[in-house]
Length: 208
Length: 145
Image 1: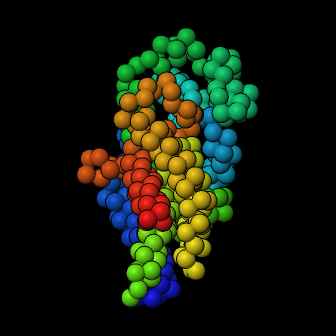
Image 2: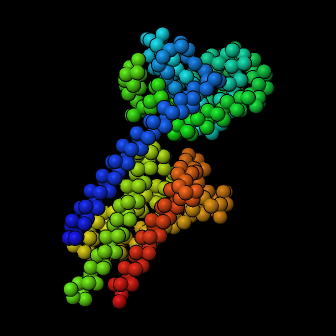
Image 3: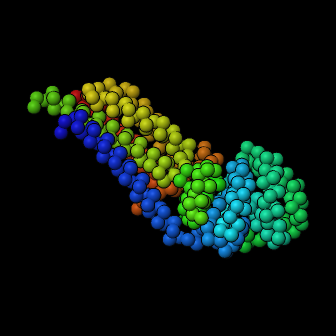
C-alpha cells in the first residue's frame, strides 16, 4: 500500500471508530439508565412539588456548590409554572470537602420537619460559610437557628446511622449514574446533553 | 528492492507505528473524557501534554520520512513514561498514599474502567508510553547499524 493511502486510511478508520463508539456508548448508557429506574428516586429522597406528578426532575446537588444554589430558584420557578405536572427529587452528591457533614445536618433537620427551611438557610448564607470550595462548618452552625432548628437535637440526630446510610446510598446511586459534577439533572431519566439554564428548561418542556 | 530502500522502508514502518500508537492513545483518552465524561486527573493531564504533540511530530515525520523527529519526540516519551510509571506506582500502592500529589479534585488512583480485572486507564497509558519507548529504541538501533 502506498504510504499516503496507509496514513489516510488509518486516520479515517480511527475517527470512524471514535464516532461510532460515541454513538454506541450513548445508546447503551441511556438504555442502562432506563433499566435502573430505582436509582433515580429512593424512598428517603425529598420531593418538591406534586408527588404524583408524571414528570420527574432529579437533581444531584452539593450544598457547598455555587451553581447548585444558582439553579435552585430557577428550577423552583419552573415547577411553580406547572404545579400539577412536575416534581423535583433532591439527591446528594457531596463532592466538596466537608459537604458530607452539611448533608448530615440537612438530613437531621428532616426529623424536626425543617428540611426545606434548613436548605434555604444553607443556600442563603453559602457565600459566607463555603469559600473557595472549602466549608467553614463553625460559621454554618451559627446560621442554622434561622431555620427554626433545635441545634442541640440536630447535633445528636446527625450521627444516626440511618442518615449515614441515606447519604451512602445517594453517593452509590450518583456513581452508578455517572454523576461527576453538580448540579446534575435528569428529567424522566434523561440526562442533560449540554449543561445550562436554557438546555434544562428545554429538556423539561420536552418531557411535559 | 535495494537493501537501502528496504532499510528505509522498515524505518518508515516503525515511525508509522509510533504515530499510530500516539493517535490511538490520543483518541482513546479523548473518548474517556469527552464521550464517557470521566474527568481527567492531574497526572492524566501531564501524560496528555506529552502524548498529544507526538501525533503531530510523528505525523510530520512520515511524509517525507524524517528520522530526526526522534530528537524532538523522545524527550516527550521519556517524560510521559515517567508520569505513567509514577501514577501506576501510586495506583498499585507501591508508593505510599502520602506521596500522592493529587488528593484534591479527581483522584489519580480511582478506577474508571477495570477491564478483565486489571486493565485500567493508568495501565493503558503506561502501555502506550512503554510501546513508544520500545519503538524508539528499535529505531535508534536501526539508525546506528
